[in-house]
Image (cartoon, rainbow, N blue to C red; front, side):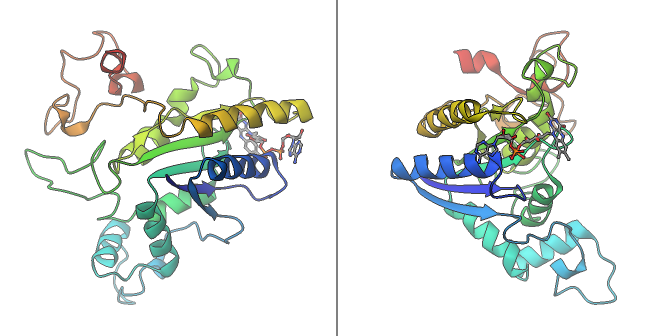
Length: 265
Ligand code: FAD
């Protein structure tokens, strides 16, 4: 497999740095090819601004989505963004690695998504009409590829459980798993999450590393989260609401968008 690991931690000697090296070493030992985007080491620019669209007239009003679409279409996106898009097209598996900061990804990684996921590349793809709402949620440029999150968290696993005060981890990660990875087409694997990591001793680090090695060994075979496909017939068009007969009658929230029955069958 060809794997792109996008890593977002400012300190190479951190736990995230250790886990990144463990993942790369294990994947390479399995014969996979690995490329890394180390966002802090690369000095990644995280904010979208006019500098992203060199072809935009200096006096033109900046409309980010429109400017992104035009720049993607005429191949005038900046070199750093084009290089990341090339890596995404090269890889058949994407891993986003980050420490959980304020219940989500660090700003530098969000900025990588904002800039690399151009209009026409990751969104605004496919026919958009009264009968079809584009190629997204299971379809799109990155369809057929796999992606997963590799996350460390200071909080306890129980705090992220079904009744935990932080909210269930699957809910917190839904905007990333569903909104960022599934949206442009990826099959999204269950996340690898290491909890309560802030005061790990050496044995604790070794245990997390071993669990990660095992996950890296099953990267190509583990079943993805059974998110419902937008164009698979489960949603009404144009409301994009789940058909009333699907899901548990009193269910709401993110879990509605998984078809666990299908996964079980
Ligand atoms: P490090 O601090 O680098 O390491 C953690 C521990 O691992 C160390 O103390 C050490 O014991 C061990 N270790 C590290 N490196 C080595 C090594 N080379 N060899 C042996 N042992 C090592 N947590 C949440 O749960 N929810 C949040 O919303 C949240 N928000 C945060 C927001 C901010 C801005 C910050 C700074 C932290 C937040 N945290 C939160 C905590 C955060 O998720 C953890 O601090 C982070 O995941 C730890 O990962 P790290 O790579 O920075 O660990």
